[in-house]
Image (cartoon, rainbow, N blue to C red):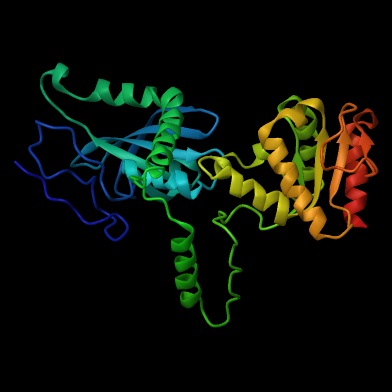
Length: 333
């Protein structure tokens, strides 16, 4: 016997879980195209877990007619980058704009119909629980693997992820501009594919090697607490994930920061990405024709190529708190 696919819950409050058009006992169902919870449904929390990128929740839904499992996905540092969104679309995860499992914040979800049989070995309850249990260790690495595979495919002119390209984003921005009411202020056009929640400009961008992360993070936390808009990578993990980092970081350090703090060290001089950031910062310093931009913090006696020795610096012996105080005064001046 086949079940009928109901209308979306967005337009039908009493709609149930969407069931696949195939025999009930033979195959695993496909994810539905509706929101997983409505007023007519009862839900029961089953499990929860998280990793450094996502929080996951597992619930059981009983609509009165049908029963099923729902896995909810919520980024710990929203919003998702366009690249990760493309992975979610590829995997068939649907967006739920007001998820009660996350205090009515947006999440993504997928559902699995409960397969009820008289024989417990033929049901899918154990499968559903085991699948959810694997998320904390395996979901984020799986997303990274898909992004890496798509990047490898692009090198030979192929792609399988529905990633929105810059030209498509520009087109969508134009469409959005047309739909704006006449009294609305038009949104500025980005110079690259930045996500909406990432600040368009930063007061400070911090460039550092891994050996100085603790110092950089302490400085970033003090500045953020003082209301300073600061670019520090761990503040924006979802925005960096899957990005073309060469273009993304160049945009930050060459165009979008008022000052660039550089933690100068031997490790900094040896690392590919820190040199990339420094070159972008130097390009902006050159364009500003002598105006202050690069603010060195010397961790040791290392001299960086391209950074004149007569540029004023402070030593880390001054202390991160004092350096933050000086930087805040510079921004206020």
